[in-house]
Amino acid sequence: MNATRTAKTRRLLRSMGQRLVALLRRKVLFRYRLVLITLVVIAVGIGLGAVWGPPGWFPPSSTILTVLAGGLLLRRKSLAFLLGVVAAVLVFVAFMLDFGQVGPGLLVTIGVTAVLSYLLSGVRERLGVQGLSGEMMLLDLRDRLRHQGRLPELPEGWGRTAVLRQAGGSSFGGDYVVSNRDGDRLDVAVVDVSGKGVDAGTRALMLSGAFSGLIGAVPVADFLAHCNDYLIRNNSGEGFVTAVHLSVDLATGEYRIASAGHPPALHYDSGTGMWGTSEAKGVVLGVVPEMTYASVEGMLRPGDALMLCTDGLIETPGEDIDSGIDRLLGEAETLVRKGFGTGAERLVDTLSKDKNDDCALVVLWRD
Image (tube, rainbow, N blue to C red; front, side):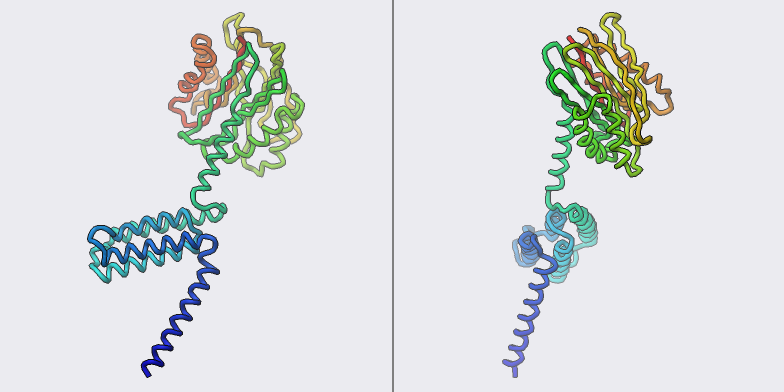
């Protein structure tokens, strides 16, 4: 009788084990089964070590490391199984040793960590990335945006610099620069997406690719119109965009500036030693369909410079925009004294101090 009962128990246990393995393969492990198995083995090992291992070598609190790793590396179903194993390990340790080893503080800490890890795993699962690949993807996008903001090399007798600052020290912002050089033709556009910091950074990443593809590929006079048409088709009520487009003939110094709701460009005349504002004006992008943008023409002579900036350098809450422009004109005098290339960083630092806004500055000069 006992032999028969033992055989039945073995068959039952074998059947339950086979069903559990099939369930894990189908619903839990997926492609991350090796990671899950490793973390489960570590969690169980911590529990066994806490009970029968050397004192102090396997504290129950170390199971929190498996929870954190699971949040980074596992999908939600796999993570839920791991959390169940960790809970069972803690109950086992508390039962075998002393409930003081697994106190309320430890349970609350692991519980909060488990919730955060589960939410983190859900976000990664929605994105289709696990581990650190999501962060690496964001870093790659950030580097691409910065690379697009680099101005091309210019021929002898010309200089250029670009300075970008994001609100709150973020790596992403709504202000960016796109440029293109084709022979003696240089095109630069400074763009300001509504919003600031990370909120505007996602739109800036998308639009920078589109605007970078348009600049230099469409007629100079139609660049802003094409950008406006693109935004009208794809805006989906996400806000407006301002931009200023500069096109320069590097052989003659002749330039054209067109603006779409952007702060005026500044022109330094070495003959008079004074800065002046451009009269180029236009409606912001993404609001009115089929807009045309008139341009203002001018000439850059040796010693002259042009400055393009976003409103983060001139706008102050409760202050008139003209006051900000006057302040910019005053600070621009330091560029002449310190040099257009070296003084740009200082000018941005001075004007963006105590402001939580994205800002961009481009200076082009002729020696």
